[in-house]
Length: 283
Image (cartoon, rainbow, N blue to C red; front, side):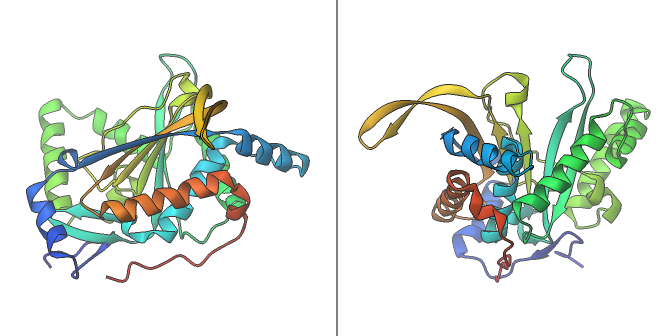
C-alpha cells in the first residue's frame, strides 16, 4: 500500500509547513543544514583517565557514539526520514560508521551499521561498537555489506546503473527488500565518521540522496583552540564536530535542543552510564 515501509511508520500529523517542505526540497541534497562546534576535551580526558583506573578502556569515539545514540533516543524526531514527499518515523536507532582497515592509501574501507533500542548505557554501546570495529578491521574480514558491494562490482556498468535505478525506485515506493535495507549503511538514523584518525579536521559531509540518512557527524583531530569562556578567550585542547542534517524532518528549535542535549553528555559523560527509557515519536 502507498506510504507503507518496512523500516518506518508514516507520520500523518504534521505541521502544515512540514507537509509542504518535502515537496519543495525534494532531495536530501536540497535540504542540508550545517553546524560545527569546538569541543574542549579536558572533561573527556578526565573521564577516560577515571575509567582507565577502573579497568575500562574508553575512547572519544565511544563517548561520542554513545551520546549520539542517547540524543536520538531522547529526541525521536531526529530519527525521522523523508521519502517521496512523506515523513516517516524510523523503526529503531541505527548508526553507520566508516572504517579504514589500515592507515595506507591502498587500504580498503568498509562500513558497519549497528542497531540500538536507545535504552543502552555507554558501556553497552562501547562493547557493541568495539567488538564490531575489531571484527571489521582485519584486512581479510568481509561483512555482509562488503559481500553485497563486491558482488555488485562484478556487474557490467550498464546493468549496474539499471540495478541502482531499480533499487531507488523500489525505495521511493516502499518496496525495497528488507535484506537490502538491513545491509545498506545508507538506510540509517545517522552516519558517523572519524576523520581525526586521518589527521585532518572535521569536514561537512553531504547526506546521501539514496537511502534515508538524516544526520551526518564528522569528528576532527585533536588540536589547540581558543574557547570563549566567562568573558575570556582561553586556549584549550579540543576536537571539532561538524554536523550536516536534513532540515525537513524537524524545526530549528528542536534541532537546537537536541544538540544542547548532545553536548551536555560530552561535558558530563557520567550521565551516559545509566540506562533510559527511549521517548516515542507520538505523531
